[in-house]
Amino acid sequence: SVDSLMSVTVHELHRIVRDALQLPECAMEVFALWLISPLLEVQLKPKHQPYKVCRQWQELLLRFTDCQEDEIMQDEPSLQFRRNVFFPKRRELQIENEAVLRLLYEEAKFNILEGRYPCDVEDCEQLGALVCRLQLGPYDQDQHTACALKEKLEAFLPAHLCRRGHSLLTALWKRGAKQPAYEQGLLQAYQTVREEAACDEPEALRQHYRAYLQRCHQLPYYGCAFFYGEIDKPAQGFLHRGGRKAVSVAISLEGVYVMDSKEKHVLLGLRFQELSWDHTYPDEEEEHILWLEFDGENEGILVNKLLKIYSKQAELMSGLIEYCLELNVAAEASALENSTLQSPTLPPLASKQRPKLRRQNSVVCSRIQHLATIDYIEDGKEIKRVKPKRTASFFTRQFSHGAASYSAVQAPAESLEQG
Image (cartoon, rainbow, N blue to C red; front, side, top):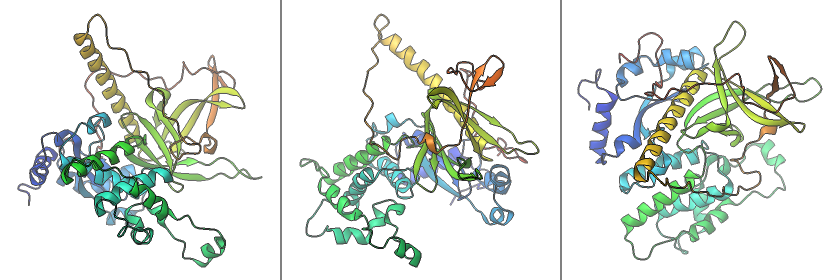
């Protein structure tokens, strides 16, 4: 029950939720309020008034989605308490409060089980084993068998791994093929979950929440905001028919990741220092497009590659990329200033860590060969196909070092700044 529903702000609602859940003050930074529906996801700013934003929801769907009118009329968002996309991962593992860790764990688990965070089978099993421990308690060989886990498999592993084909066509196609027994791998991983002998159960829960989040942090798209779009398929066959592929675009403080919505794997992952971007508005023939430019090869020649992402949410994606870059610039400047103050003569050396080895064909690795890109090089004013440098990209941008100004949404009729 909320007083003054029509005028209550996100900041005030956030405080009410924190008090109800008895969360510490750090939750102010960790979590944000989101408006979520199957058609659009929006993180609200503290000064927004959720009631008024909900009243404008249909206008937002018309502006930022390609949905049919009947879908828009029936869609209704829910107000959700979720992880703040701008909260750095490195600060998560410093959190000690069990309630905050549990909320972060539950959200990460949801994204794993729904396939929003593509994950290799081995990692799915390790994450599922931690879910088993948290839900079923320490491993007991008498209670926790492969058959027992199989009955609840979708509570521990992503849905696309647990689906069983029930149609006649699927049965005929898979006849004679041995189905993967994921419950066996899950059981083996469950048996190896470490238990600290000296700690009580509340401390054990904190350790397992943190272990789950640590493993999720290895996924580059953990904590991202998600958007929907399409990309061109590579031309195939005699008639060079390509068509389009549905993708989800994940954007965080670290970079941009384009993922195949159906196959649940990464098509392209770029850190911000590896890309340039632009957003173009539609004319009579074109659509809203987010352009991503990155370095690559074409038949052994170094080229600039352009990927077109068709989406009415391209404007939101472009704004979020720019805001994340401004936050990174501000954070780097602050870190440099602090290190200078601590040691003006001998600044601390940057640690040189070897990158972690990735399994071949891992879902987190880019699949450039599955992309239909525009490959080009620059030669003076004329664009040609042979020159290896990208230093003079036509997407060159200048970033302000001033205050960040990203706004998650702007309604076309009634400004959200007023709401």
